[in-house]
Length: 137
Image (tube, rainbow, N blue to C red):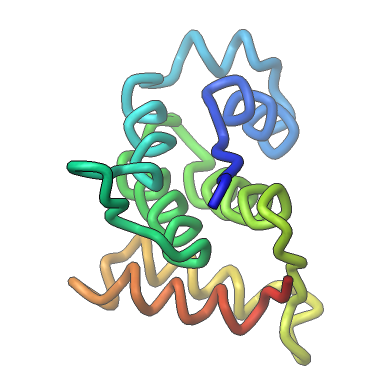
């Protein structure tokens, strides 16, 4: 499977759009090494075996790491969520909010729960299932 991963330039562009601040300023005040780590996590492998072969799991790992690594002074949850959706779109998955979530409250709550550590060890699996429910090839 040929996967289109986000890179640091993508992260900064998304951050710029979400936070409405110049990417240069965001780069200056951010911990870019933490962003890089999160951006590379979905591609992790050992001995040619991918740790996360499923696209929904890769998207969940990306979002979880961006939210938990906290590379930005502010906006990590929002940027992590948008990066997750962008990753899905780049890899051929159409994002569809569930019925009743037109205002985004259920989506926001999922990301807030993730940031607060609710879900524990199963947080990535829970988020991946949630992503699968909202995406279609």
